[in-house]
Length: 127
Image (cartoon, rainbow, N blue to C red; front, side):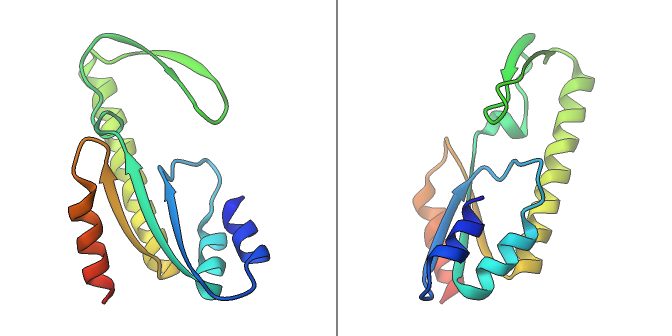
């Protein structure tokens, strides 16, 4: 994992910007905590609005970028969209908790929004 590589390779303390969607089936909170003890880790979550709210467009083929697994989902179903939204909300809450426990400053940036404002707010909070 990248965090473990950072911790092992970088001998001097540095500020490391971690850009990711942070969607991972593995628990990376321990590696995040260890990396942040040695370095100043800043997490920047980048995500598409359609990950948070599925559009009701009917059948949609989705592919897991990590595993390549593909499946069809029916986004015209309000139940499917609701379950997906609940998953996203739980995922975001767990991610926020992990960042807080690890002491990692973080920001979420949506791909269709201006990232400059979000980053400016993050850096203002860090000062």
